[in-house]
Length: 287
Image (cartoon, rainbow, N blue to C red; front, top):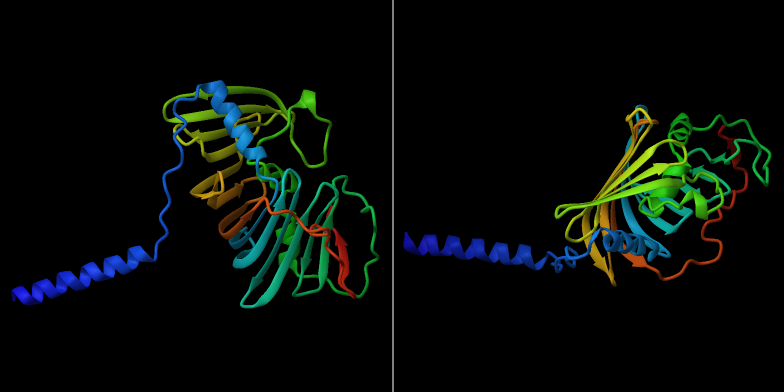
């Protein structure tokens, strides 16, 4: 009986050892508890601006009232204003999304339709005539209408938005009219009054100063956008989240993403944010 118990304990210990061997361990993030409010605010701003570009594999879940799906893909960002996300499911391409200051474009592979939105809602700078009689996939239209280029742009810089008095207007970008900072042992809270009348509140961990959440509310206090950040990992000298969730209450859409194979500040190839219209594609404008 004793021998059987010893064998059981040995097998259990072996299984635990194998499981632990398969897990990567990371040191805890640096402790910045000694920084006062001004120094802590300067630190988080510096960290946000340190990301020049980032590429990663991504597992993406998208939920709207009319659309729900889980996809795999590749993400490329170049803050403060450029993003590309190409997704697939079961080895089949689903969509290719590009966001720049000039336009938001989404090519929906199943139907060969390129959906396009520009900041002024008018004709794009380089109009492409619509060809063929395709009506497009209704899911793509619904999905694209729920995408807010301004939200994407703000999230690229971890909602580190430019001040009104130091920057010119830019398409799809909020600016900060005023700011208040509160520092406690448990958190650094940065509250920004935005040019639109909305209010942005970001909460950072009090010790590591890693961003935990960002929330935008309208003048009446209603939640517009809520973003959360988890599972931070070190990439060089920066700690970045590998899990994010963004809920846009205005459009009823939730994005959940998990990142892997992250490449940070390795440069962006020319043309990386240019979506070439495939031959025979239908081009549709979203107003």
